[in-house]
Image 1 (cartoon, rainbow, N blue to C red):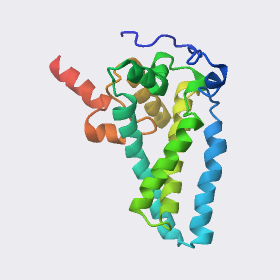
Image 2: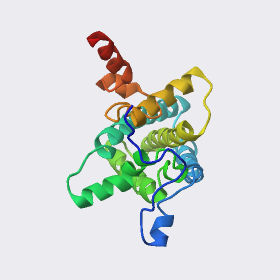
Image 3: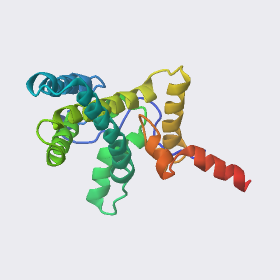
Length: 214
């Protein structure tokens, strides 16, 4: 297998000369939990106690938000994180956004999304969803969307640094490891492989094609 990383140890390269900026390019894996659990609870509180949306509708909208996140995860990873720019500035931005993770996949401080990216991105999605939902139903939907994001971020860290034992989690881990060490043009789903199967970027299909051609 071709080596497509620089280091497989828990280490990374310095990203900024400025110490202040460098500090904010790294983040502990618990930070998304600390930031986003209160935000999720806030939107669920508004759902149930301010707007008094019934339980069934709440569950359905939260589930819809989760489902939409799964596609968002796939879309961002495939078309934004793996977009290959040609300009020097573009390449630099790509490295900062995602390239560094492929070069140093075990770097524990550059696995979950930094707040300087996740919070503005969450705000943009919230504004987008306000155009789709009213200011009432957007609350449970957005809570579900953020639950999906949080599950993705923590799952991503766990895949690289936790020991997996169950068949389900071993499958999820193996799927992502193949993306890193086998073919980075496949396996864009991190927390789940749903859209890889839908759009044909799963490894099962690729492995079947290899066996057919042998």
